Structures are given as structure tokens and as C-alpha cells.
Amino acid sequence: MELETRAVAVNEKGLIGIVRYKLSADEDEIILRTIEAGICGTDKDLAMGNLPQLKLPPGQDYLIIGHECKAEVYKAPPDSSFKEGDIVVPMVRRGCGICRLCKLGMPEYCESGEFKELGIIGVNGCFSEFFKDELSALIKVPKGVEDVAVLAEPLSGLEKAMDQILSFQRGRIPWRCDDGSMNCRKVLIIGTGPIAFLFAMLAKSNGFNNIYISNIRELRKDEIILVNTLDLKFYNSKDGYLQLYKEIGPFDLVFDTTGLPSVAAEVLQYMNYNSVLLLYGFPRKDDTGILRPKIMNEIVYKNLGIIGSVTGPKWGFEAALNHLASWKSQYPTVLDIFLKTKISFDEIPDYLKRPKFNEIKVIIDFNK
Ligand SMILES: [Zn+2]
Ligand SMILES: [Zn+2]
Image (cartoon, rainbow, N blue to C red; front, top):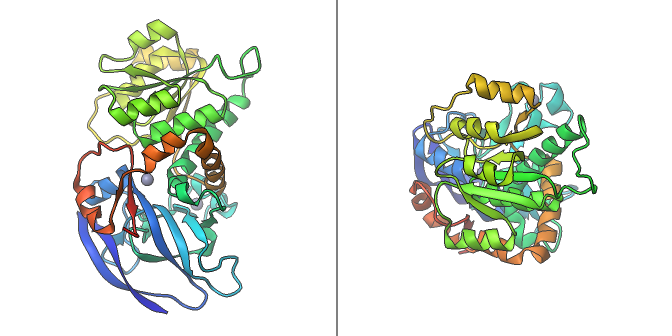
């Protein structure tokens, strides 16, 4: 089967634009039709030529980007577990096939560095009207969550990050409070982007109820609604975190979405004994942060855990879809705000060139 399709392509220098190409598939291959896709910072970095990890697929002089996808099975191979019309989301990280962890089905912890990533490293992504993918990389979306499934990818990586935090703590101390809840634990989320708010919802679903979210500017209208609906507390961090520390005391869990070493170095001074800093952001600005001896001393003396985390495993996508299903009834306003800005396929190049979005999330609607 062969069909002509349009897609958004980049090379090492950045955005090429919309390309047309012929997609051909054998009998045993699956063809997917993209329904929705999310744009994230990685896509913008790719469009600006600012992502050194980028790898073109073998034999191709461009890469089709897009990794936050919701797609419909357009042609299913006979005798597969998929059928035409099924709604699926693809995983991003693909195992190297060489290292021990990839062989165990855990490409999110790949140890060879030879992994691939959909729309980023060596595999064409879903900013394409139609695309092909490996059957093993697809997760079927259960009925009832199809309308919010485009958020499964960004949430899948957070499921893994939360699992890392909880497993790490479980391995060393009883982290629950005296009443058996997590209510005494103070969480600080640095940043107010989509990842920050998704993490806040996930933290709530894991029992954390004392959550601060921060930015160096005042909140926009939608962000205020999210903060209020999720019962978070906003802190303006333009003068640093000392004031917050003085008001509420040391933080038990800090989740960073900014990737700025100076911010991490500062908050490390205000953390509780046996607390965790999870680093999730990639630096997008130059920064001069360094770990001074005083901060190193804090890390050692207080048994601080500093954990990095990237990409979502298959179980993370499944957990994400389950959480989204419950958030549909718990936080409908929040999901509405996440999904309200829909652009058409033709508008993608324009949006990719924008340095910043004012919207919480921008979704491409391929039916628009
Ligand atoms: Zn992304
Ligand atoms: Zn590997």
C-alpha cells in the first residue's frame, strides 16, 4: 500500500517546513493516521536547530518531528492485535537492542546510549498526516479516554519520574507522615509550564497535598485558574526561594522543570533532611550556576537525593491513561485548559518559530 502524505520536517540546521512524501507499507506493517499531536519545547528546539541529540533516520536527509501523538489505526496488519479505527499512542523511546536494560523491555533506562526516539532521534515522528510505526511501540487507548489521550506522552515521563522518587525514598526511610498520609510533605515545583501542572496533578494523585508552584513572573489568567482548581500555592521566585523557605520551612520534594543549574543550586540550600530534588528540565538558557562547597555540604549532611529522569516507559503510558481517565471527572476544567488551543496542520511551522507560547499547551488538530 502506498499513500501520499504531508509532514513537518527538520534537519540539523532547523525547520525545513512542510514536505510531501510517499509512505509505503508492506502487508505486515501498520499505518497510522494522526488525529492530534502536542507541541513541546523539544519540537521548538528541533525547529531552531538547537537539539544536538537529533539524528536523521538512515538514508534520509530530513527528520519528521512530533512525538506527542494520538493516532487512529488506518491499516492494520492481519493477525495483529490492532484493527482499523483503534486509537493508539506511540511510545517515544525505542530500545537499542544491545544493552541489558533494553533487552529487559526498559529502554527508558538504556545504558548504551544507542536508543532511538520518535520524531527526535532516528525515527520519523507524527507531525505527519500518516505515519508507520512498530507494533510493539503502540499503546491502545481505552474507550472513554480517547479525547484526552494526546496528553499521555508528556504524562508518561512524569509517571516514571514519580516512580523514581517514591522507589528511592521507599528504599531508605519511612517517608509517610505520622498519620500515614503524605500531607506533611512540602512539594515545590519550579516552573508553570504544562509539565509543571501535570506533575502537580500527579503529585496530588499520589497523596501530596501541600504543593507550591513557582515562576519568576506573575501568573497568566489560565495559570491562575489551574492553581486555584488544583488547590496549589503560587510563589513568585524572582528574588529567589529564601522568602518561601522562611515562610514554610524546608522542602521535602523539589521538581525542577527549568533545567537551570543556578536555580537547582539555590533550592538545594532550602531542602529538608532526606529530601529529593528531581531534575526534569533541559537548560535552554546560558546559566552560571555552580555547586559551592556550602551547598555540597548540605547535600551530604542532609542525605539529599538528586535524581535525573527522562522519557516514559510503556507502563508509564498505561498509568498516564488511567490517571487521565480519573482526572476527567476530578479536574475537567484543567484538562479543558490544556486542550483548548487547537491549531491546524498548516499552522505548525508558524507556531514552531514562536520563541514562547502564552497558552498552557498547543495541540495540533489534524482534522481542522
Ligand atoms: Zn515532548
Ligand atoms: Zn539500550
